[in-house]
Length: 341
Image (tube, rainbow, N blue to C red):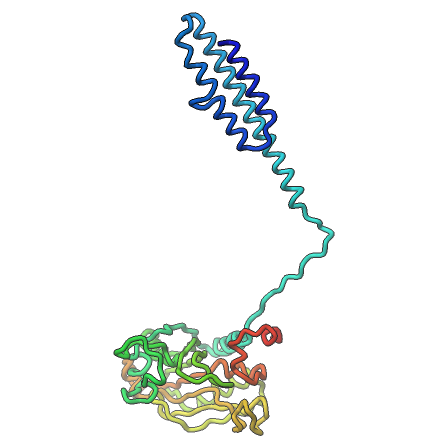
């Protein structure tokens, strides 16, 4: 048995020293030290030895096991070191090679304008609100004094999500007027930007998905003069002090009186071109004094408080801000277009 143990030690150490991979080491460990390995087979013969020889052979077997395990551990460290050196050679970096230029993105022109507008309104004491794009018809229409037979509530104009017309993709950020008056203490001065959806045909100034900025002010003594002064100040900060604006009478169910605000076409200077459809003006927002019914519906006494509201088209503001002739360019993600900004 002594000779067998020495043979196992010799053969195992020679095999371990010649291994070149961790898998080979594991195979050697199993071959000599596993449950069915050569050392285990020798130990099973211990019962046939004389009693006085068993401790001697047992100690020798333990020495063989320890030698093999130590050799495996040492060879494993050698293999790991070799693998690391090979990886370092394989992944070596030549620091003298010029680096690759990284392309860094930048803010989309539309969001550049949005951030500018936010800064303007924040400086005027407005709070920025965010609201749901999937909305209840009650907030989008009914509580904004829009009757059931209003054209905007037709399936041909609005994206409804349920057959009963109770849930829809909001057509305006005016829904935030109601939510603000329900949750904010008086006085109220808020601005709510966000995406809105309408079944518009795509052209140079229209899209079925676009961005709107709703504004609302409710306080004692608010007048139409406050509305016009606020909007003119905002528009001239965006486009410059010489920007020409005009207000036209209009009708919105949730404001009375109502108006629309235009800016002189940035492309043709008011002469008429495809961008402004030959009119010389581009509509940028609708506005008006908050209707007394809307105030009452939110628990606000219209005899004590008044307010104004407005909704701006962000894309149209961006068109004028950067002299862009076609709204579709904003959504097409053409790098040639975006790189200009």
